[in-house]
Image 1 (cartoon, rainbow over the protein chains, first blue to last red):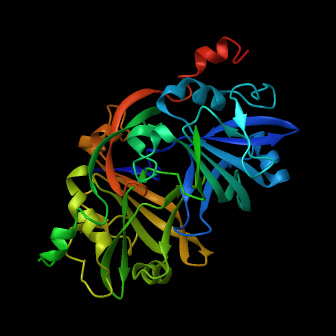
Image 2 (image 1 turned 180 degrees about the horizontal axis):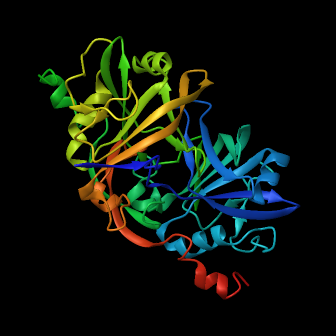
Length: 193
Length: 193
């Protein structure tokens, strides 16, 4: 039996990221799990929804650059902390050591196994939220989280999954099957009868 | 040591959904994992990025309504199949039994533990892709996947996580900690020194 819940957002779990930006001349970090993938291709566009109340927004809007860092399970405490305090009244610049890629205002977090630097493509105005559409400029990953063919393995990167309903972080679990593969036998058999 | 990978989209894993729509008078389903969460609030906006080559797009654009269904692990084969064949040359209407909520053109999948019906808020044009921004109208969940307080529990709903790098589906793994909670002790201690 299905229960009607009202207009509840059930698009969880989502991926937990730490957005890095330069605000007022200082590096700042904010935890964001309201993320999105727009397309598949090049340029590659991804979105980050930030309440307009957040301090980080002005840095992204000013410099049109930001970083997206994907913390591993071992960084859960620091990641959660970065979402609990505002850069408006707390200096978070020392929370993580950073490195620079191609962009000037996209501080990349050394301790995160995966980092992307993004150029701001556009900002979508969703009343209470700025939706930053980033174009991915370059991606960096610890060699330890790469497969033999040089791809990021989620079971090695161990990102934090965010769930708004239970208000918990979850790990990525076991592999279940191949994409564009698990349904192949069904296709060969002619699909549903 | 970090390796530079080029502009690789590392915003994975993402949530696997099955979008339901009415195209040419017939129910159609397509598997979509390029999803996004725009804001937090009411109305609640979520996005779905579909290549313009897909057949489903015209149904969403025509009726301005669609469903978003979140399959459990037990539906991996059917879910993958729905992404392997096009409604243009294969009738997928019999793949799932559906039910109707408030909207006329948002066929909800009975076998999926969680379903949402969405009104099309706008379509963002990303050259090769239509990004459908949906406003969530109502959400339905099997009672068996709800917590005692009536919230969707991802460990009970068991959604399929999609990863483009390894081209695999993954399960949701174990609970790691509380959001807006795991970092509280660090905040009390005054953060980073």
